[in-house]
Image (cartoon, rainbow, N blue to C red):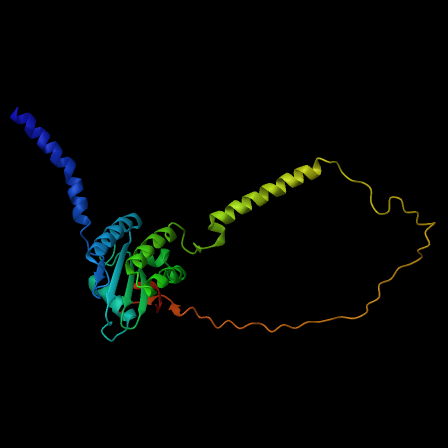
Length: 258
């Protein structure tokens, strides 16, 4: 009897062991709220969301907030953090997508390292910054950070180099295109089912008995209208571009105000 219970205990322990390892792995910190913008419950929820999607995309989603970036600019502040911690999924200097905000200068900086540099390139980082900036401006920091995770997750489903916000990927465009194509096919089938029309403008015209002897075209005048080309002065309020940190980590990125 004792031997039987011992076997059951060992089996139960082996079953629960993977759960314990998973929970231990989930204790990794990805939210560094030095500016105190998030409540304790928001930090906990964001850590769990980040952990879930970091595992799915093999990319750590990391968030930094600060009240002043040590007078060296938020760009350098975020990049130095990446060098100092080596943060990233599965290994030192692994894949990471970092969002940093400075409350003093109202700056926001996005950086992508390793796999994130490829799948969240400069163009996609610009799109992500555009997505979260209105929420940052409104003071909805948790919403902005969670929106970043969910949108980045969607973008990373597409191959690098593809614009994930292209109209070609919108469901309403695909539905409309399908309906239009179906309508054209049905129209062509209906047109061809009526037989070919062989009567034209010369079927009943007797050229020898017509009083029309000749025809000619006379050019009278020409009118040309000129319209001034508009100038686009909207620079989007930010900048994009990758680079290399002082520690040698290559990255994609986007920076701006909120």
